[in-house]
Amino acid sequence: MRDESLRTIAASFVAVGPSGVAIRTRLGHLSADDEEVLRLVGAHLGSLASKDLKRRCADGLEHSAERWAERKRALTKESSSRWAGSITKATHDQWALARRAQLAHIQSLQVGVRTIAHRLSLPIGEKGNRRASGGYRSAREWFAKSRRLQVLEDRLSAEQADHAAGRVRVVRGGKRLARNRHHLKAAQLTQAQWRQRWEASRWFVQADGESGKRFGNETIRVTPEGEVSLKLPVPLAHLANAPHGRYALTGAALFHHRSDEWADRVTTNRAVAYRIHYDAGRCRWYLTASWTIPPIKTVPLSHARTGGLISVDTNADHLAAWRLDEHGNPCGRPRRFVYDLSGTANHSDAQVRHALIRLLHWAQRHGLSIAIEDLDFSTDKTREKHGRQKRFRQVISGMPVSKLRARLVSMAAALGITIIAVDPAYTSRWGAQHWQKPLSHTTRKTSRHDAASIAIGRRALGHRIRRRTAPPPHDQSVRVGHRTAQAGHGTPGREETRPRIPGPRTRSVSPDAARTRETSASTTVRDAPVDQDWVQDSPLLTDQERSREWSTRTTSCSMIWPSSRSGVT
Picture (cartoon, rainbow, N blue to C red):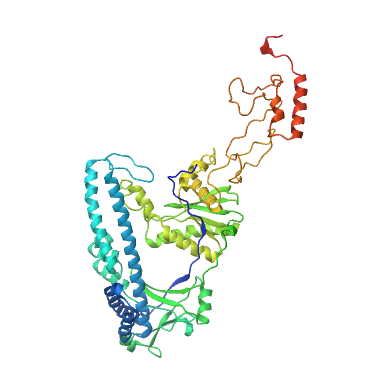
């Protein structure tokens, strides 16, 4: 019978591929004049972008196409029409991102308020369960949480008022970097170093692509040979060293990743967007090219399951993977792809990419799809739900769920590998319950994560997670039957143990009878009794097997000697 306390399991689906491509390269061999021009252009356009973002935030929900056109005309006078279009588009994207983040923050506050209110309503010391938290442990903790509830309710009411009015709070350059100004020692920065990073993060040198224009972009132009030139804003037109108010950089930009795709778009004058930015920590200039790609046609789920797949369990420091056949049986040994996320953001990103590329190469060698959990810890990261479990909250907060998912889908699409997303509900619990112990032996200890990967793969294949009862071995009178790991859901008796079928070396006891010392099977032929009438009515034997069994046992009974237990000598 189905447990009503369990939530409904969502259906598995094939993940949609990426809609765009972004590649980056370093701008090397720049002269002092080149760097000075890039700094001036970035600072000038960055100030315009800050002013435009302020106007957009002031408009709030009253924004309209007329106000957008008005802002763009004001920016065109101080830059150009194309620069103004890039600035206004980036402004709208940033405002929309802040709006989504505001809504996510409101939802997080609502979850925290509901959790605290529920726990405060319970008696002190009452235990909870997996689906709902219990009461607080002491009166002191109850009092502290009652005060925190008031704080969260005040924050929630303020955020809801801002959301209703269309007010968002955006910091160009990043809130974290802005706060580091007051904690320079903890950030290991001097005031001059912080100022340099702050100004560089607020520069704006990016331009949208245009199809049909020369090399796909009229504002920042990159030739197939790597020559980079940009259209200077009106106030900086006197710095041009090329015709039509352009400035050509001495350094060349050569793309190594997806260089053939980029060159094909540039030579056919298809749109390519470019962004030039400065890394103050490394003192390097970079150029990023991006473009949209047509949606990748996904294969049906039934085709993705053909031949089995590779199931992956995501963890804080590794990916636990196991190959399953199309029936859900694990093949070979489990594999583990380790990554270290304790370093910087660039180091963590490189670790994730390295682990994913090894996983994808393994799947590519066998021509299989990959099944992974559709994880989302948005409701589990709150301190109110796992208050005292600080270590657990750190683990789920440190897991690169969104970054890993986005990179896996993008890298798999480039290799032609299908990704199947699976509902993660109960995979760890049921995997350990049904698969961890049976797959462990003296030379290998199956971990809980390996067992969870099997549960994920079986759910992606459309099978139930629990194991089936194995058929009897070949040396029994009934040969291997239908009840295996591939038994269908409607197969009668697939979860039951098979009854013992008495033969010439077993006692005549009905399969339904309870096993006692009187009904246990003997180990000698002489102790087998003659009254075995139930064999004729056994539904598990065919007519031919019944006649063969009866003739064998009749012959055996004629050769029985008197038993020593009867006292006859």
